[in-house]
Amino acid sequence: MKRLHKDQRGLTIIELLVVIILTGLITTAITTTFFQVFNMNIRTTNHMSALSQVQQAGKLVSEDILEAQTLDDSPAGGEFLILSWNGTVLHEVTYTLEDGELWRSESIDGGAPATTRVAEYIDSDPTNTYCELTGNVLIFKVTATVGEGTWGEESETRIYRVQPRPGT
Image (cartoon, rainbow, N blue to C red; front, side, top):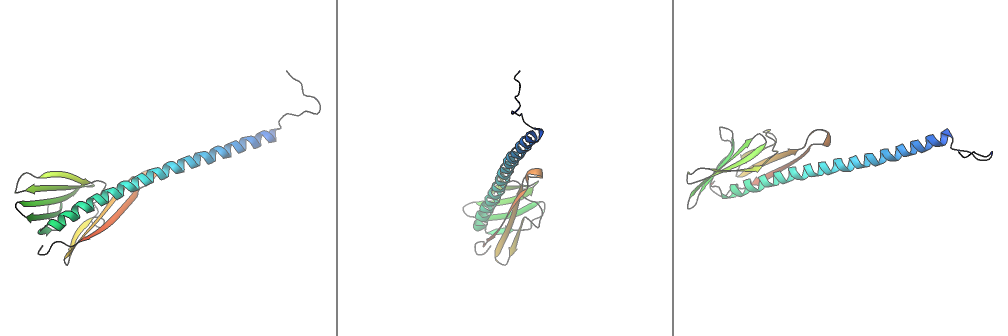
C-alpha cells in the first residue's frame, strides 16, 4: 500500500459529497428529459389517432349525405343516421354508434347489409357527437378521444356542415 507524504492529501468528504450530488443532478436531468420526450411521443400519437378517426368519419358521412335523397337524423332504435337514395338501385346507409365505434351498414335493393367500422374512439355523449338537420344543412359533429391515465388523453372534435342535394 502506498503511503501519503506530508504534502499529499486524498479526497475530503466534502469533495466526495459534491461529486455525488452533481452525479445525482445530471442523472435526474437525463431521466426527466427522457420521460418528457416519451410522454410527448405518446400524446402526439394519441392526438394523431383521434384526428384520423374524426376525419375518416367526417369524410364518409359527408360523402353519403351528398348522395342521399332522403335522410333521417333522429332515427329510433340506436341508429345514428339513416340515408337513402334511388339511382338504378335503391341504396340505404345506416350509421350506428356503439361502444365508441361508428358503424356503417349499406344495403342495396333490400339485400343483406354490408357493415364496416368507420371509426373508433368516438365519444358517444350526444353533446359531443351528433347529427342535426338545421334548415337545409346537416350538421355532423364528431369527437374522438384516445388515451387515458398517466400518459394523457387527447381529443379531437370536428363539425361538418353538409348541404344535402336539393329535394332531400
